[in-house]
Image: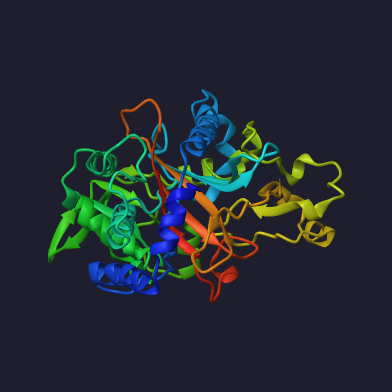
Length: 396
C-alpha cells in the first residue's frame, strides 16, 4: 500500500528469507506454527489509518451508549449467561476488509466484530520477526500510539489487574490442540501466566484452583480464551467448573461480551464503513438480488455456517423461530492491494484490536493483525497451495 516500501520489499524478497521467517517461530516456540504465516507484512499509509480510526470511532460510540446492555441483552443465549458481568468488555476485535470507495480511495469495510481477545501477545513476536528477517526500518510499527514496551505494559495491566501472575490463568479447552496455541506460549513469555485447560480447573465451593508446579494454586482472575461452541464440541466432559458457575474470580474478558459484541450488534451500527446489515426477522420480503448478500449465523466462530453464494432455498430452510439468529449482510468487494513478489495481487483483511482496562472510560485501539488471501474469501480453505497468503500484520 506504500508503493516505495512494497517495491523495495519485493526486490529484496527471497524464498530463503521466508524460510528464515518460519524457522524463527519454530525455534522461538519449539514447534511449527499451526497456521500459515504470510511472506510479507502490510505497509499501511497514513490516510488509510485515519479512515480506520474513523471507522473504529463509529463502533466505540455504540459501545458507550447508556442503553448498550439493554439493546444487547437478548444476544446472550439463556443457557450461556455467566454471572458477575463487569461494566464493559476488556477486549474488542473489529475485522475490516480493505476496499476501494467510489473516489478510488482505499477504505475499510466492516466484516464483523467480537468482544473477545485475539492473539495480542504473538503480535509482538510477529512484528519483530518481519523486521529482523527482512531488515525493515525499525520505526515501522503495528502499535497505535504506543511503543512496544508501552503496549506490553498495557496488555499486562488489563490481563493481571494487579494480581500476581501465578493467580491468573489463560483458560482454554485442550489448548495443545488449538491452532492459536502459539499465542498461549507468547502470553506466558510476555505476561507470565500459565495456560490451563478447563478440565484441569479445581472447584471447591465458590473458589477455583489449578496445579502449578505441583502446588494447588488459587485462581483470582481468568484471561478467558474459551467459547461455548468449543465446550459443546467436546461434550460430554467431566468438569468441576463450568463457565456459568457463580464463582469467586475476576474475568479478563468476561464470557458474556463474546455475545453482546458480535455480529448481532451490526444492525445497530450506522457508519459508512459498515455494509447494510439486518436480522432476517426485519424483512417482510427478502431482497431480490440475493447474490449481493451474505447469510451469517449469529452464534458461530471462524466463519462457520456463513453462506456466501446465497439462494432463496437457503433462507427457506431456516425455521421461522430461528430467523432471529441470522443476519443478511450486503457483500463487499475486497480490493487486491498487495503486489506479491512472485506476481499477482492479494486481498487483505485487517483486524483492529482494542483493550479496555477496568478503570478506563473508553477502549483503546492498540494493535492490528492482518490476513491475506488470493481466494474468493479469507481463510485457509480458499488458499491451498498459494503464496503470499495467511497471517500477517500491518506496519505503519
